[in-house]
Image (cartoon, rainbow, N blue to C red; front, top):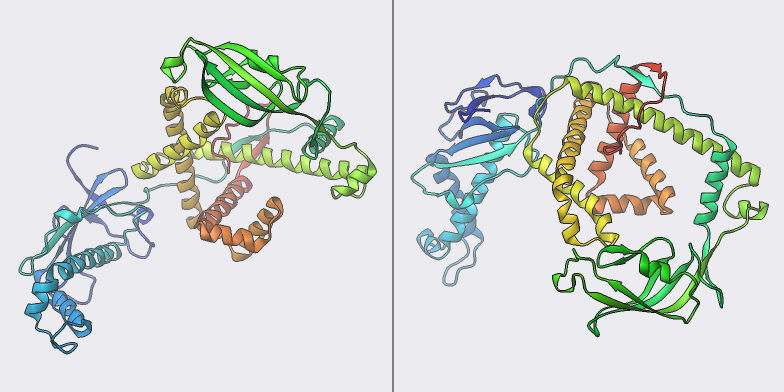
Amino acid sequence: MSDKLKPLEVKADNIAGSAVTTSKIADKQVTDNKIADHSITTDKTEIKEIGPCKIQIKIEVPHEKIKEKLDEKYKDFISSAVIPGFRKGFAPRELVERKFGKDIKEDFKNDMISSSCEDAFKTHNLKPISEPKIDYQKIILEEAKPLSFDVIIEVEPTINLTDYTAVQVKKIIPDEINDKDINGAIENIRTKHGEWQVIENQPAKNGDMLVFNQETFIDDKRIHQNENTNFIIGSGIKFFGKTSSAIGDSLVGVKNGDFKEVDVKVPDDAEKTEYRGKEAKVKIAVKEVKQLKIPELTEDWAKLIGFDSISHMKEEIKKRLKTQKEREVDYKIEEQILDSILGKTDFQLPESLVDENINYLLRRWTLPMLMEGRTEKEVAGEMENMKTKAKEAAVKELKIQFICDHIAKKEKIFVTEDEINQRINELAGQYHKWPNEVRKYYEENHQMGQLRADIREEKVRKFLREKAIISEASEVPAKADKTNAK
């Protein structure tokens, strides 16, 4: 967009509701001719598009309206204020102005700004999607002059979608569920039900868990201490943010009560520069050695975890695996459809939403790296590469959301209360909670709107899939990127 401000064309996609469509709004002041009251107290508004999905509204409140409303403000204050020496409601205005005028006017100014903004949004059918930006400090209130100020808002993008049904896609035919798949799933279930048990007088081997206290010394000075550290042999132990095979390998064969001393060099790129390249001594006191005891596959154990028998377990697992594969096939079809629509549809996004989504993705991606023991410096070193990837993912995710929202409105795809209740019941079963607990969590964390939006997007994806022209793929393509999977 050039530096010259262009008049905004307010379209059905970036206004609230579709009953009113304003054609081109010129750069001159615009008054609402549709309001029955043509009095001099009508606010004047001027609207300009100043960036992607960004609108500047210039509002001017006539001084006659300011005087009228401010008089009402003083009357209301005087009628309820308790002022020494005067009966309630009879204090002189001049006295009230001297004692409380500054606070009253500031409160009145904020009220007028808020109400004028709401009137402007309603008049021009604008629906902000982020908090309006207003520089309150620069706004001066004077009774004899109009109250003039600017407000900047972001609105939904204008989307022109005409061809989103009958999209041609390829269906990937999955392999049949076989005994290997079923047995692998059973092993995973058994492992999840395993219990860590302390073993006595047996050397630790790969896969065992150690519980130990650790001290690290450099130049005979203790610089670090950890107690009751849990470590699974073979998984790699962190030392100054790096995986140390020397420490991990030294713990193979230890028993309860053993002490170990390991000499190891501090990495040359350690975050703490004063320790880089120095020799360190790590002292480890083993408290416990544990092995994972996996339950045997018996008829009794199958009943214990909710199945009638082992054969019933296998039947149910086969059904679940089949459903999972079918959902993966459906997901890949939906991704092909949405990629096709994205390729034919170009629109800009609100900058604040893009930035917010980028930051969210970066936090989601970097947290596991920090949890693995990598230093903040190491994570920061990869941040630039991650930012590029995060922006691409954020833009795609937001565009899909807006496209699905647009299609939902056009096709009248709604989410019912029964569907909300069903999803809450599903989540309750998944997390072993009561449905009312799940609902309370979503309500208290203001997530009910997001839950409804997720369900609506799922319904739009299903609608697109059912309307698509699907043919079987002759060969299996590369796996779809699940960055935006819900």
